[in-house]
Length: 116
Image 1 (cartoon, rainbow, N blue to C red):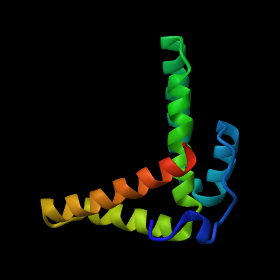
Image 2: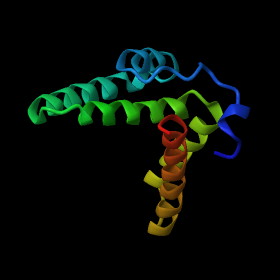
Image 3: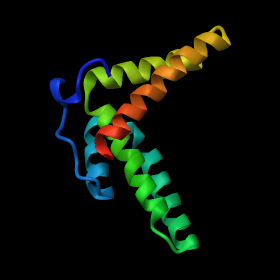
Image 4: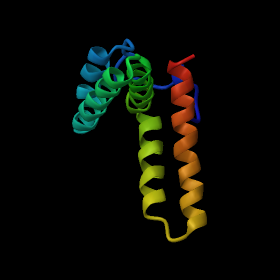
């Protein structure tokens, strides 16, 4: 992200790191991604039950907190989605790689911001 997250206009405040708070926030900033989140939550719950541990749920929450960190910041969201689109429509492997690196960097920065 080109500017510190605290300097950028936020669409919504950073939500609590609970499935309910993340789902409510996603409904505001990216409602089209709710089915993806619900599918991920269902999978995390099933894996937690199968393994007898809570790590799948923790991973689910950490991932969606990072997604929300991107989506709630307009400049980060635009950069992320633009780079993702360009990576998926690149004319060469090198061009794809360049845009994919940007996507990964934005995600890592958001993940670090919410999961320190």
